[in-house]
Length: 84
Image (cartoon, rainbow, N blue to C red; front, top):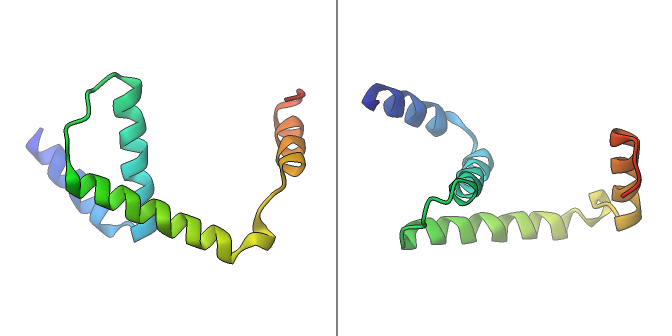
């Protein structure tokens, strides 16, 4: 297991910062999905907050790239062939 964790750590270190934060968010999602209780971790909470704030600032700076609810609904309908 230690070799696997070391290999995983090396790969994560090579990812861009945004991808690292996205991975952190996904791991949190998986922990919730599999009912793994959260351990209080101030460092994790600070990293997640920083990621979310950066994502929000990026979204505000690129409003022209944002989709309206109707545009998103149309995309989903075209992709999955059903109405949402």
